Image (cartoon, rainbow, N blue to C red; front, top):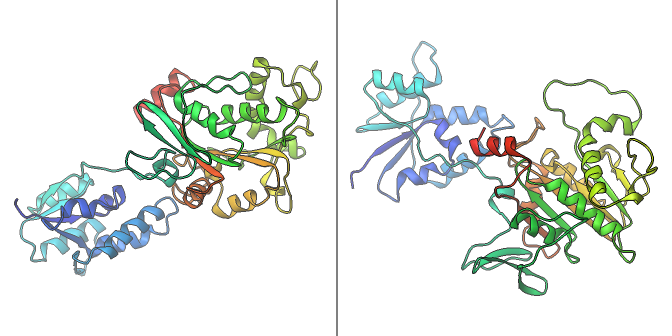
Length: 394
């Protein structure tokens, strides 16, 4: 095979921090980084949205002892980062360098200097822990507690009592799963020996709906159960322009953020009456009975001790690690907690795909006896518009 000298641009390392290994192809090729790339990574490490990618890239650079770094080349005139990279390549002794970049302007400039360019085609999008660990383990891999594995076309659950094939369909408060993954989510939600469950999925796969149906089932369906109440908590992150201060008491301030919860509960109430979680049935708008169902603002969670309840934490990807810890350490005896979210949809400007409450939960609790995680996927979602958006990758 022909030996090649690859010079990697910053955007390649951010696309896939492990690209250094891929381009090296064992010991076949030489990988070179311009000094300017290190400077750009140093600046980007302060960007909350990119810091986790920069950290991984730096880790790969540190681990590669054979990596070549081009010395900086400075001229009297100040130039752009692109110009600096090109000057560092031109004034090096690299034989037939190949600059790998997805920056089309840099590609044009490089061709002016006679430097060969390639785009990075094998992009590997970053996956957070909560995306990468789907709740399934592969064939030949030792199962961890509360994980699934496909065997002969069926999901097999590995739990406290050994393994069992899940060839039956659950039902929670009149809700039947629309996919095998929704059925497995109900398997975890309703499991008596798993008090902490997290669910990751894109929009429209029924995380919140299934969690609410399971909570109603656990709290209202049988008299002899440890759960007396449902709590729901979520971070209050606005999308788009800020609405400013909202008038009214706590419930009135929370109302715009939890309207979808009322809509889902009303839908479940139509499937099967859930009278005990509402105050008066003859009102046009159903009001929640705080003795049975309470919206829990994170602001007031400190010092509380939740017992005998099902707790739903929605949009957990918008909680920081500290906030997630503060919330989860409020869980006392007889609590079952559902943590829901999508780490690809982080709205908190101070968090990113890696550094958020949901991802930290999966990273730290994976494999523990009382914890389980699953990623929902499949063809069914909220509706045809949502399906098209997800399929298009918008």
